[in-house]
Length: 121
Image (cartoon, rainbow, N blue to C red; front, top):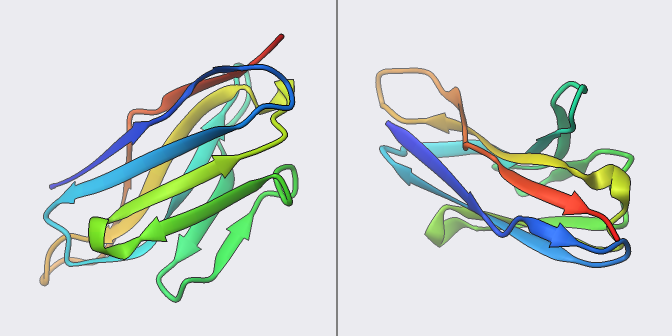
């Protein structure tokens, strides 16, 4: 089994910064993609940023230029640096990974429990 554990959420003022971390552990053969989604109250979960195994990344238009995702392959860890935060960035942020956890099974999605990010003055 695979576990994803997020950390780094909290309360920040508009214009501030936060850095989220997500560590993947457990039975990992390979990680095809890893990144972040978020869900605000009353809204659907949406992609924030994602790194693919070839190191390409993609971002939601709403965070482009403000958020940066990066990974540490040796630690199976992904980071989300969030700058110039806005109240509309308030949401629960979930770590996501497309992981092959067995040599005899296809890759599947795994999710962390989420970490709250609140942007408010």
